[in-house]
Length: 263
Image (cartoon, rainbow, N blue to C red; front, side):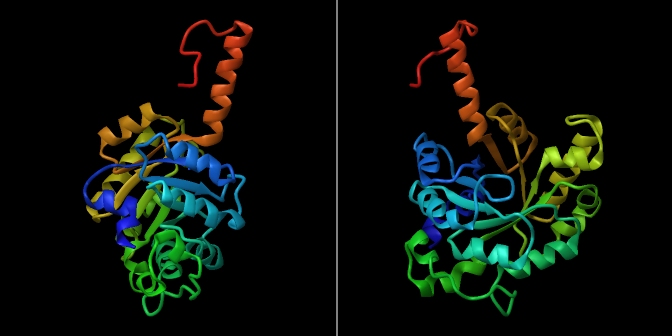
């Protein structure tokens, strides 16, 4: 099992977590993107994406087969939602809107088997994803799977030091767009960046991974240089739309420069 926990292994080796946002159902999208190389995780977005739990297994299997860890973002921090994602073979679960340490403790509990937590037992589809026996999954799941919470609200930032100290929590992941809206501040402005920097510091002070959503590779590089351990570099449907728009520009003559090929 440990050999296939690609993201955890990279982070433990002090290598950056490089991933993308998958919002489209169907394993062909994940497989196509991961074939380009360089990724060690993919976010399977069941909160805002066109993905439901019936898609989890196929997407998790495809991502793992391509050498990347599937991280499933569930719609909310409900126990049954976290359980469904884990039982489908997720290498980690991301929950939105963690406001305080009590939220984080609850999420950790939902993600771990007794006696540590309250996760119900039934990981029937996990061994095929990890390529291991069920007994190996049972003994290693609590240690090897990632618990990831999103810091993207005023309460979350105010309580971020206490959230970061919660045992069993692995990653604090900033959702910068929601954060700006929840704070009612300008995206990229001084207050927004101060909240991001506070979360980064709190995560590292507590020995946790600091992560942030980035909409493109240029921003991702800036955040890595800032000290973040884990970033996304793109969103699948946004890339598809942007490239189709670009190619239409070439076809209609409205775009004059750039590479017109797919290679």
